[in-house]
Structure formats: structure tokens, C-alpha cells
Image (cartoon, rainbow, N blue to C red; front, side, top):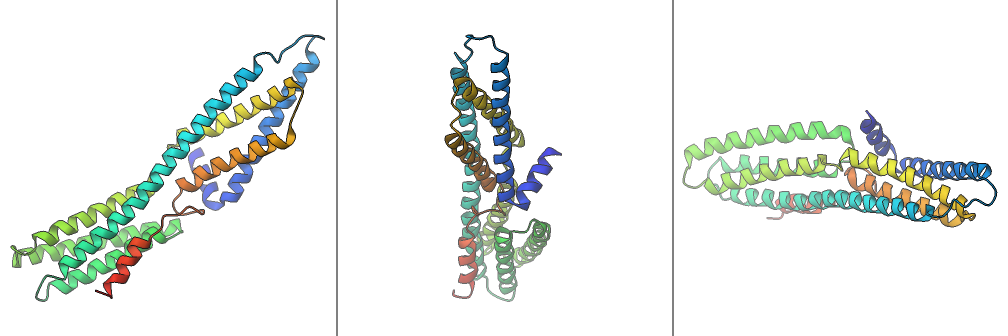
Length: 264
């Protein structure tokens, strides 16, 4: 349930998501500062409490920074996997298309045409920024796979000695499309995301407590830190959702392949 709420929020607007994260961090910092103020008012005169607080707070922030970097690394790896698989898919489509052009008779052109349509569907799947388009594109891709393979079976019975290369290229094209779909659906583990957000609020609250204990709030520097921290979390959300935000997978390899169909 919480994962669906988080995904819905990031899908709706990354700017709104970032603003809410920043607001939550500022509130956590303020709560920590207020708790520190309340403790200071109840502390006996002359008693020192700030000894050791800085060390504990630094440890919490260090662990939080490690969690942030780990999460960004996981999100970036998924992004790079999508980029790599788009290129792999484009190469496999081009290989299958070129081999289909070598098939003589009346069986070759229909397979070539279906491969061209398959490439256009895959290009639309990678390029679309509408989540509601995914189901229709996946269904169209599946139907094309069945049609292409049925035509390939008929061709293999008629020309068994000349179609093995095309059959191999088609299976690689289908496999690349499945791997690409899995990569686009793969995200940072939800538990890690919630751990990062919960840990952020706790650590930033501890920072507010420490600043009150030390007697110096540093409003400007603290604000810059919280904005940067919220930006890091927004970066993760952007990398994690391939159809939203500014960091998108470039579909150029598939687009070039489709353009080559009319040039070759």
C-alpha cells in the first residue's frame, strides 16, 4: 500500500515529491531542535549534555550517507541496464531484419515487414512517457512474436537448410525484448527506499537536537544540507522510474534501426 502511494506520488510530479521530502526533513529537523530546547529547559543549571551528541549524530549522518549512496548506485545500475538493453535490442532487430532480407520467394517479405513493425512497437515502448500505454504495447509485441514465429515455422519446413540463421536471430530478438521489459519494470527495492526516507528523518532530527545542544543553529547551512539531501532522494526517484522525470533512456539505437529500414 505504501509503495503504491509512493509510486503514485512520484509518477504524478517529481517536483511535488521533492517539495514534500524537503518539507518532511525540515519538520524533522525542527522537531529535533524543539526536543533539544525542551531538554535544555529541564536540565539543571550547569549540567552539560552536548558531550558525545556530536559523535552520535555524525555516526547517524555517516550511515545515512552510505545508505543514500548505495541506493543511488542501485538505481543507476538499473538505468545503465536499460540503456544497454535498448542497444542490444536494436542490434538484434537489425540482425534479424538483415537475415530476413536474404530469404527468397514470397515468404521473406512478410517476415521482414513484421520485424519492422516489431521494431516500431519496441521503439514506442521505450519512448512512451505514459504508463497506461505499456499494456497495449506489450500485448502488440506478444502478438507480433507469435505471428513472426508462426511464419518462421512455415518457412523452416519449406527451406530447412537456409533458415537456421534467421531462426537464431529471431530468438535473440525475442529474448532481448523480454530482458528489456524486465529492466524497465525493475526498481530499487521498496524496503531500501523506505529505510532511506525513515533514516533521513531520524538523522536530520538528531541533527536538529545536536544543533540546539551546541547552542548554534546555522539556519542557512542546515537549509542547504536539507535541500541537497532532498535532491538526492529525488534523483533516486528519477532514476528509478524510467518513464518520468529528466533522466530518461535514450531510444536513439532503436530509432536509428527503424530509420535504416528505408535506407537499406
